[in-house]
Image (cartoon, rainbow, N blue to C red; front, top):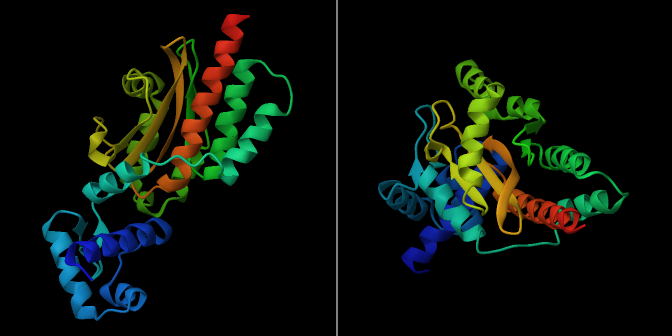
Length: 243
């Protein structure tokens, strides 16, 4: 196997396993999956470490992906869009279940996304008001069991105006954005990832929605859901505006 191909496969295994298990990954586990020697995998992991894609927690012999690795992974996902996921089908049924005011729909979508993904969600109304659902999900993530970390995160979420200012800066671009770890220019949020997507009326950003979670977020599931919901709300608002 070509060395570069092997590195990509090893990194992909580490990323996917870390997302699922929130634990450092050892060479023996990867070697068994790939049918290669542990020595070969250790050398590959060493290369990935030197290139800045892996790091080693102080208390473990295994490795975990760095923010750089997650950025590489997320960029590859942004080139894909699966509109046929189970989550999207459920939200579609929710949207079509009955006629509702758009404020109610935004709240219901936010609630549904939080319930389906297991992450904290937020929605920004055209009136520049922010609504949040599932804040308690932050407490379910292993990397946030540290009391100091969780106090900082919950403190930021509780400061609605400060958090809204950050979110509006992301929404102002008018496109789906993913900020990983230290890409969030907010002290205390460097352990989180934020996914945001705006909704628009005739090309003008009037609000948006998104998800807060760990850097080890299930991006493959979440990105299509956020994108689909934002697009759906945009279409709904366009319809209200035209009437």
